[in-house]
Amino acid sequence: MHEAADCLAAKVAAFHSSCPDTPIYFLGHSAGSAVVLGAAERLPTGCVDRIVLLAPSVSAEYDLRPALRCVREEIDVFTSKRDWWYLGFGVSIVGTADGRWRAAAGRVGFRPIIQAPEDASLYTKLRQHPWDACVEWTGNRGGHYGSHHPEFLRAYVLPLMTCRGRVVQGPASAP
Image (cartoon, rainbow, N blue to C red; front, side, top):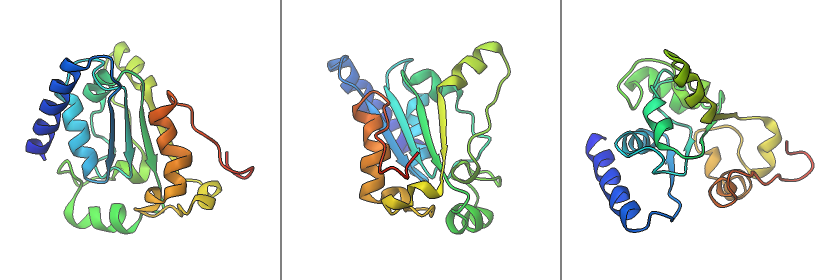
């Protein structure tokens, strides 16, 4: 995963140098979240506009501070306690994508690491979205691939990458 993160970071750095005003968004799912976070850690402050993580299989104790420094806006994380097969059972057998034998952030969310006042400020850029039954209308029923449903992506993920963080609401039953 380190090679993939290095490669992504190099390509994004080159693109950012040639097009500094073009927004850059990262989207990672499951183990791909480790690649996205690793790339962000290798990039300069403010290089990436937003990071969206869907069911990240890194540990809940993963240190997000380097990625939070890189991101200009926020890191949005979509989690689900219903993801018991991949991020529950699977992680208990093979560990998380960052090589730990801990709860996956995609099930329980990230646990902030606050060691200094500036860390608390960084973590204001972390937005965690636990799965709720009110999004079932999109086809997302809380499983590992629930966030892949086109209606869920249209209503909750794509707006984060096109409307400067404004999430478009679904029907009246949606939050």
